[in-house]
Image 1: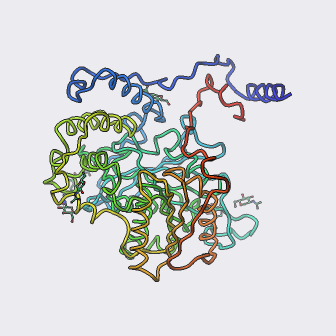
Image 2: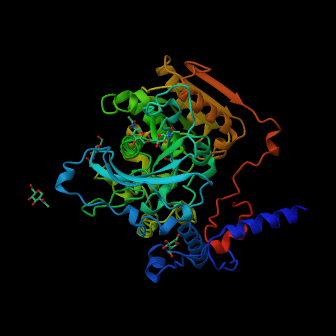
Image 3: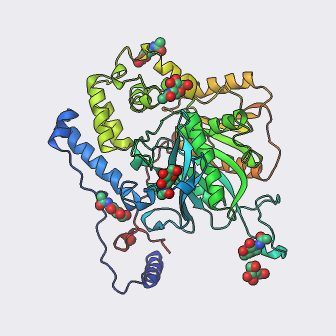
Length: 502
Ligand SMILES: *[C@@H]1O[C@H](CO)[C@@H](O)[C@H](O)[C@H]1NC(C)=O
Ligand SMILES: *[C@@H]1O[C@H](CO)[C@@H](O)[C@H](O)[C@H]1NC(C)=O
Ligand SMILES: *[C@@H]1O[C@H](CO)[C@@H](O)[C@H](O)[C@H]1NC(C)=O
Ligand SMILES: *[C@@H]1O[C@H](CO)[C@@H](O)[C@H](O)[C@H]1NC(C)=O
Ligand SMILES: *[C@@H]1O[C@H](CO)[C@@H](O)[C@H](O)[C@H]1NC(C)=O
Ligand SMILES: *[C@@H]1O[C@H](CO)[C@@H](O)[C@H](O)[C@H]1NC(C)=O
């Protein structure tokens, strides 16, 4: 019976395809359109053995197959519009390009969501204006609240109001370090079901900056735009200037009200957004009235406190000269580490291959790496936490988080509570939960929190508050990690893998 029902559904689906000739089902291959192999000089430079070569090539080809339209280096969208004299001197938050309709056929996003992308200006850590990209994932129907601030002018007839969607800024966690690793070019928008998909399905317009350096890798003069990884004040600016540009691009579709949310690197960004809105009230006076709060999930508040110190030193170090011009990567890494980082940069490798390249074999970190002032100064300038912030702030953390340890977040939260006892900061701790899985464990809580803030409801807990969550069943019964990825099956010859497509 089930089989018959499936066949009926399948036939209905096939007949819905408009192509006159159906392609035959094809065997799905994860390397379906990438065939990278290392050159002899790359193998020598990175001191790669045959086992590592094979594994890396597989990983790199998989990564590249996850890029919609071949990614930023191939997709025309990411080509910078040329500056004319009419553009005038560039200000941050300026809209440079709008792709109102992004063809979704190369993406694996939920049905009845839609995608737009923009290019806009932001500033790097030291204040230079640079271009950056972002996506907007649209809901089918916007979440509606009794407050009318997200509704456009009612055009006389009350039954004929133009709906605008309330916004959630989505600040992504580590997607990579180079231009191709922009979430806006990843088929599943990098965080898929962990946050942007459920947010759009709940009726929010998800505004997601790629963060400068991801997506657009070079400025107008051709100079490199390094992604200033973990420089949370800079990435917070990317988010807020990006929102300003998005509101310019879609004034009748985006409401003024927003919540900022992020995870991991982006958790630090969401927290830094709350800090920027307290510190730079004049700069963001246009956005402040719409701000309803921030959610920092597994936030990075002590970057080098992570157990993955070697990796962090390498990927922060590879861009650090853009903040501290006297810094050289050889001050932190061994010669092999420097050579491998250079190879990763030349090939613009994604997170998976970089982890493998940097962490297989010998430790690449020099034992005396932290005897210079760079690590301390970077941490002091760039870590989120401790400072004054515009609340309310919800911090989410799992106790079994390897990358952003529970002990570190707890320390930052407690110190922030003691410095700002009059601010609203709720700390929600999920027992036995890991890094990204925390977003899944607490999904009903953060969706409800966003809803309540945008509806203008009072907070359940004011001031410094802690909430502890435990699993309903014994924690050993739960799947503790994600073993599923959004596999793109967009071409008709692969559609047999999507029995519930239509
Ligand atoms: C991979 O497929 C996309 C279509 O989604 C295409 O635009 C891109 O050029 C292809 N990349 C390679 C390396 O073949
Ligand atoms: C732009 O302005 C500069 C300086 O005022 C001028 O030299 C140049 O000819 C102008 N370019 C165009 C295309 O108008
Ligand atoms: C009324 O609606 C039309 C069509 O949606 C729109 O073009 C127009 O700008 C609206 N007028 C006002 C005052 O909002
Ligand atoms: C809504 O407004 C538009 C533009 O003014 C108009 O074309 C349309 O007929 C209106 N619909 C209803 C249900 O009043
Ligand atoms: C950027 O700012 C930092 C902190 O103020 C400063 O130490 C550094 O010299 C600046 N770098 C550049 C390139 O201006
Ligand atoms: C420097 O880093 C090492 C690990 O690489 C750590 O054991 C040591 O405590 C650090 N020293 C300082 C002063 O932070």
